Image (cartoon, rainbow, N blue to C red; front, side):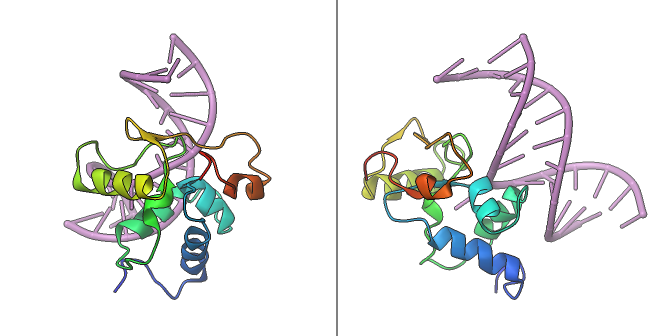
Length: 117
DNA sequence: TTCCTGACAGGTG
DNA sequence: CCACCTGCCAGGA
């Protein structure tokens, strides 16, 4: 069972937002939270992923606001996420990914390919 | 109920 | 661009 109440609609929105991120693209915790209708609840997204047990969830596409991997460098999670991202064609440099910045209102543009993937 | 911790975000130097 | 500090939300002891 999940650490958070899966019955909660908010959780469903978050999961949906995460699944909405296309392959080869990435998104920030805050972006997911905002898209889920929970502005300022970026940490809630993190908690959700931390207790997530669904392997089909594209958790590796979720990065920090600055585009860096949230896991500590060298950790299993860090390497795994970096590996998955590269597998999707995402360029990972020093545990960091070039995040699309600028218009946050137009998430549509944000959802588009950033590194050309 | 109070204190501490965490897959965070934003601003300053 | 990188390092450091402050603010915020939610959960667990």
